[in-house]
Image 1 (cartoon, rainbow, N blue to C red):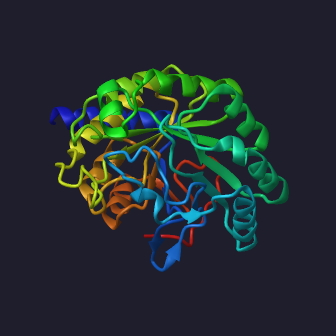
Image 2: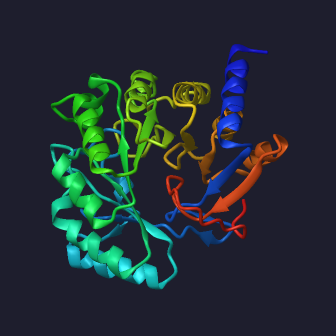
Image 3: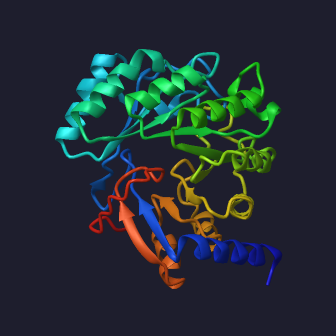
Length: 317
């Protein structure tokens, strides 16, 4: 047995010991599978605008999101989505030069949405301070998603910020102190397709007991961005980060998120071999591997971060 195979087996067994021999496959709101769409769309409160213009994104990821650039527009959009049977929404958007989103302008709108609907609400928090985190908690936000970068150089070069990852740590502290559920995301290969600060990101996250789930994603090379021609991060390297996360935090649930290169079935299979508990937009090969391992399989039409169980066995790959 190779070293990687042995590592993944140990990671998988630890996952099964703590979370059980099962996996949930997710269909987020921006994707279609077997003519079905997810029931958890993403909304951008800045439209297509982002001041950071990060090298891996250049605001491309905002383009398919529903624009709602005013508090009233956000309320109207969410009320319409709730009326059409959606389970919840991911509220996101572009950042200012400090890496922040305009939450103070939208917190009251979120509170109104929670009062008028049963929508489960996730937010991409960005860099955030304690008062703003408290405002989101008071508004009823169900969970905060945040990218955790473990290397100052990567953060500065790719995100174009003039500060280091200590600002991310401070944001995690603010979210935890506010009592918000935190869903950290680790982007593997962000440093030009190479693993650099990912294990440090795992170490940072492990210091926050409020974290019950970690999402692992991999650099998506988007056309028109400076990283378009970057060599993709190796599937084995991503699987290694999944295992490192499992060994460091055996009690957390680990997801392979939707932000990854499409068609990389080897990555999905290795992730299942490492014992991920959740996976967004799986391939037929990934589902077959889960069945081969005898896992109990669930399906859900939300983001993979959503802690609320809303299984939909009608959605299959």
